[in-house]
Image (cartoon, rainbow over all chains, first blue to last red; front, side):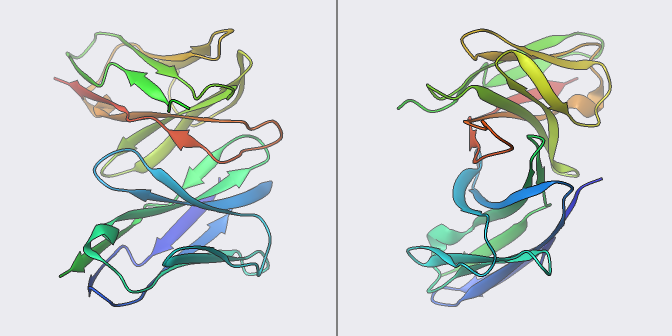
Length: 110
Length: 114
């Protein structure tokens, strides 16, 4: 069975701090790794990573995939209170399935 | 482009009843996936449909079923509801022509079983 593990489960930081979220995966027929942000509603898409070592960036967020070691990292720099959310990572397979981790709850204090 | 829409947004049912949830994907997306989200289990994959065919399903009992219509709209049905079926049911659409692809989620249907 596919397995996606995120760490830490939760963290509290102050505005301006940098956070690093981890995601390890064991997904049969692995295709890509996706990151989502979930506030009190549906998950919103952040990144899709398919190649090792190529960093994807969007503003203060960046992410990278290591397909040899089977993990991904999501970084958020200069955090703001609006970054408070649950961050989900998911392994996507060639048989049309996303397997999600439990998520990391990030709380940013002013 | 309009996003993924789900109806109804909230439902209250009693044990033993059945329920049907509806999902309309983003225009042009032919893949629709369904997930159950609970505080204890997180997001769990239910099934995925493409062009009216189920291509994959998760580990849920047969009480959970779905279908997709020719216009890519999808419905999910849960029969003989149990208390443990109380959850947020999310549907997501994508292109997914070859393998799983970026999925865009609807707002969800919050089901409460009393």
